[in-house]
Length: 412
Image (tube, rainbow, N blue to C red; front, side, top):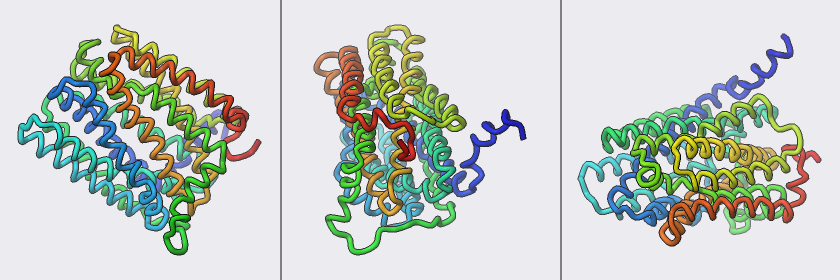
């Protein structure tokens, strides 16, 4: 075998395991469906109320369950079969998609039922996320884990490219079609998840106590490198996230319509999948911490550029680069968490991580909606991007061990 062939073969290491292939299909299908629902709900709510604040409430309704249930969802993932938890959560998400379809068919123009269903959707995701994130480590050997994490991220990113475009096209054709498609995707994802062979899992032992429930928080607090990586992503995306306001840009600023909204939503995923594919074959070998800070700062800079742009091609290019830069942060954070955390703690640690991720995404959408209502959409995005750059600089000083981290497996 020539050395030129090695990178191509090493890129697909995780897919040599049948359990991972089914897992990846479930992640892809569920994320595809979530993206369709997200685009459809955002457009539907804004079409009814024309109030950007309501777009913020869309994010808040999905974040609150993960936040309120963090002590429960992580414990469930560590004490019960993660595959079963993952599949059950996907079934629950399918029920919520079916109810959203029924609501839309009713022709109602009252938005509060949508928010109630989004809370149900967020509750299912609150159980799905820590179980699925922790499960990947049980499906591949440790030496293939970094590759699996890169492909795991790519499942989300590929679906984030196709899902929003499909959601925008389907919603433009018919709102009913978009929710029906999401329901079908979630059903397929549930079948794929439940077909994964039961993996070996080191479950948490002993009675459930308050101390055992909060062990995930304690671990993260002790491991300052992990704490710095998780909190950096939290505040960077919390401030720099502009996804919630894309319906405003698509309708009022760039005048692109539902199909254009799908393109805007897909652009960050296109950039991210390019980086994920690169990282699958060329994992970070050195200076991981420093690179993470650099790319978070660039994410903030291009958020500012997107905020001020009034040209569709420039806006899409800025979103594409935002996704590419953010992918580096995601890769470093997820690899650190999975490689550094004992298996019996992974569910609880991933539950905490998912709250941080949810806060940076869904709560970030709420932040964007509130700021847009107060100071205007463009100002909200620009100020958020500048805040992200400031966070990257501040965290580099506050967490020197993370800045100096050279390798992702705990080696100096």
